[in-house]
Picture 1: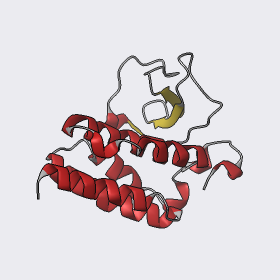
Picture 2: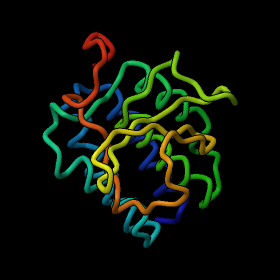
Picture 3: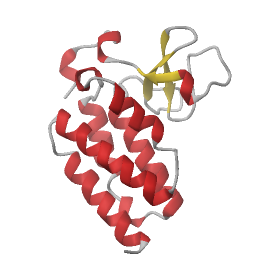
Length: 160
């Protein structure tokens, strides 16, 4: 298969996964992300594989808003080039697997996503444009994880 065929297959798998219940969606994304790691010969997907592979499914904060945003990100996925496709899949993971809310936006009007910063043992939020409420200028992916549902003080009706 050529790259276009692989890309369309991954897009189909994502589209199907987004229609499933939470446990099935997470299980399918483990497969999707492993396929993407091989397809792109990249470790960029490891952060998300670690998050959804090591955290109990009932702690992954998949919101209705995040699911809706991920579905919108599928719109032109098949038309993207290799680099943009990879970036979009990673962005879909952030939309799905981090807490976000349509009313919690940065000054540039992009959604915040919630993470946990190990060195300070606290939750922080970072927008899609890089606006962050963490006092640290730079941090690495191995210093953070997604914020767990049990750590977030939000209305449970926001989650799928």
